[in-house]
Image 1 (cartoon, rainbow, N blue to C red):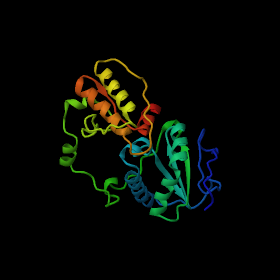
Image 2: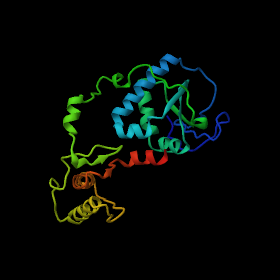
Image 3: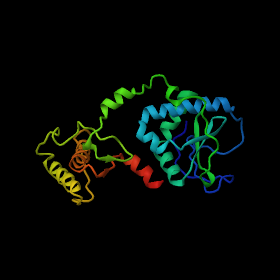
Length: 247
């Protein structure tokens, strides 16, 4: 397979469409189309693989509106409703998507992305439950989910986003010389938010992996909600934010 070609190309049959040709060959063209049933089965399992590999937040943000239009020879044609989403998916997730397709059928070696005309899609290909498409993916039981996320005034009024973790609070944060400034600022942000005022807006927390960024942000949301239950708090990932921002 040739290197990934990120060049944008145009299709005459789809106005204002963006294309990614993984193999570097011409994306559009006539050939042998795959059967509908075969495509349905592959697409369900590809989505299940992506959901398991990327996690629910990333999958919902970037793959929920990705649709398989057709497969011709070794080329899978995919579509999304917006130009931004098309550019983002092909720039950041083309390789994982192709790997998922290839894992299901080694004959699929290329991808072609387009923007759906007027955002309108064909009927979505669904042959079976995606949750059961890959048996290894285990969903938590309702009982376990309830135990992990108990009702609490400390969560405030949480809108769409990730669940605030009651274990990641200021009380459980391990302070030190390297993080004392970040901890102090985080406490001030939470205190100000609880009193409906603003401090250090916006706040950026930067560090290497595993040094407490998520813990501090989670602690801000938890502490502010605990002090003022009328607050509306949204705690979400950057990918999820981008998804809501563009839609």
